[in-house]
Amino acid sequence: MFNSNVSRRNFLGLTAGAAGAAALAACGSSGPSDKGGSGDKGGGKAAATYWSLSGVPGEPIRQAAIDRFNKANPDTKITPFFYQNDAYKQKIKTAIGAGQGPTMIWGWGGGTLKEYVKSGQVDDLTDWLSQNAAVKDKILPSSFGAGTVDGKVYALPVETVQPIVLFWNKKVFEQVGAQPPQSYNDMVALIPKFKAKGIAPFSLAGQSRWTNMMWLEFMLDRNAGSDVFNNVFAGKPNAWSDPAVLDMLNKIQSLVDQGAFQRGFSSTTADSNADQALLYTGKAAMMLHGSWSYGIQKDKGGNFVKSGGLGWMNFPPIEGGKGDASNTVGNPGQYLSISSKASAEAKTAAQKFFSTTLVDDDEKAGWVKSGGVPVLKGSDSLFTGDDAQYLKDMASIAQNAKSFAQSWDQALSPVAAETLLNNIAKLFQKQISPQAWIDSMNGVIGK
Image 1: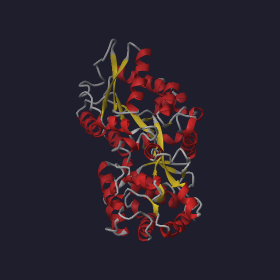
Image 2: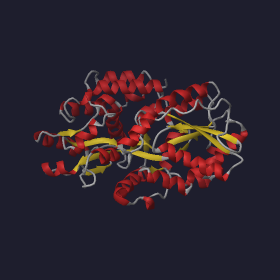
Image 3: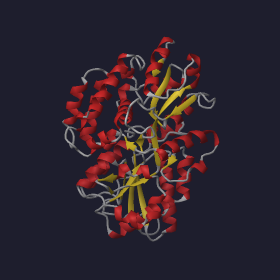
Image 4: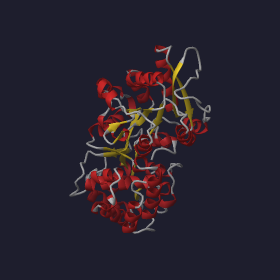
């Protein structure tokens, strides 16, 4: 998830103009052609290379970090290369496969990182983090999961956390005389109340597939805890056959039968922000979405957010469920790995970058200013202005989560993720039975 649209990662203060600039940003140069990087964009020696995404607000913050490092380390500079999202994913895969990747590999962790580890492309950072405990202590513990494979850390959490939350339109709730749901049964009970007033209970961009996935992620977690999907991620045969999965799938199709989502939800797209518009215009009462949704509604919804019309909360518990109510899912961070093919000099430069610049106060302030909640601890004091409460609440969800699960389509391998997304779309459209869904997903475990 969170890998095909600028708004899915950068959720505050991203104006229409900025979003356009990000979408039109050039792919950048073709990248380094050596192991560890020897090119240099200025004076001094370039010891390491760094590849990441282009576009605002991320690219300027990443560039600023590199500039700070290069100024402090003129003899061991880092050379950055920035690419548009889709171009980056293809370029990094090709470059790593050819042994021509950068020193530092930016990514989302999860399934792709697991593939890198299997092929011996990235360094194990576990011992380095033990020797540099002060670095690890500055980062939210819940962010390390997606950078960990078989109990070892292969990628450092960087940048921001982005939990999925339940948003609601306060004015619509007042109009119906309803209160925010405190449990799953409360949510279900609200469906006929809103439908009776001609309001869609939930907005859903069903055509985009990953938006539907959010519902499954939370419903499985709240019902059974994190063990079931952890078994899937670990490659345990028939892990999807857990009874909690069948219950989750039946609940989803029951919601569809009850008319929980707007008419035509399966043709609504997230890229167009049509799902967001349904919420801020009062045509829908609630929406399960990523924390970046706040910025979209603030930018597109007129006075909706400023007037206090938007509410938010963690997904409520399911009665009798085993999952901890503090658990969340989404993006526990972005991640940087060090190429195992890089030179010793390049690796040393990368490690110094990790232990200094990427955990300094300027890094923290830069992401907060962009509207993000940093993976670095102690950011709360920087949350000021109109967005302060929202940022504090998102930070609280991330920091207090007993488990911060990575979105399933990022956690799984590319093959399994595509099968998952296709089956989820069919599930919501009632084109596949729950048991057939389980059988199909069991067939791609470990692939």
